[in-house]
Length: 446
Image (cartoon, rainbow, N blue to C red):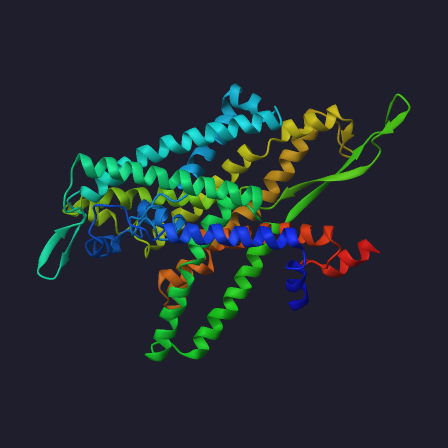
């Protein structure tokens, strides 16, 4: 392993890309600690302690804690992700966007441009909402003997400054992500999200060390937790990489004096085609009741109903798991179109052995995809619900349990694997041993 890490820095281009990526990620983390003007940081820290079980808490997760600190990057990359999801959903129902998706490079450029415009529009709307949220009466906290507001001088000036600052921060972080993708290593947007999640991990470790020193938790319990984390990460890797391969044969075609086709290949159907999106959608919906409840702190009826949507309620986690299964099928249907795949295969002379081209092929692929997605969706729901199980069995807090499942772990594993695969390709192009299945790769070179 040490030799393999040394190989990375022996390739000038790869060394430059990794250094460039790390430098921009440092800029992202610095921006996540620069507060916007016009707020009282001490009051804000006290007032933001109760947002973890709301949509604001989900936002804070993707912003790497920048939202709870009301910093330059408080919106994080979520407006860009929201715009990308909207464009992708429109591509499934609106012919204009479907046409753009089929136009190749020019279509991708147009979609990227529309996504950027959408990001700016969403950022403006969300920054206005955040300015109103920070000025609201519930955004106040007791400091000493006084109850102070987060914004000492609310008004139109604070609203404009907040909107300009947060929108500019989102555009900057989007630009940094695109630069990482273009000139660095890995997917820039995904790396920015991952680094924000990983930034919380040192505080979790320090908290566990403090519990050991106070003899609240023993060494043996920590060892069990560490072993459990390795097992869960292993299963998540299997979920992320698992696929069902459908064999495809291409018939030989003679064009002029050349013979095309005749090779055998396969269609890889991933066990988890939807990735982390079902958990994000499900969390967003599950957090809506608790978010609404924050605006009615004096209503006994709403606060009583909120017991069922508390993060400690089994009802919450049961509904959450069902939503994940549903959204896994929903997003898979959008991301993978069996009819389009079957039509492309028929156009280029491809067929599945024993299956007629056209409608029969699309039905066969759809049937296999439905069967493969079922265990994937159930296991995805289990991974998402596992933090709650761990909290009940091992009596750990949610900050630690979130690294054993859910959105955080899936994003970290998925982005890490994608980045490692890109590093692997650079190593193989220069005839160096990679990280993944190095023995097989050596035999290929021979």
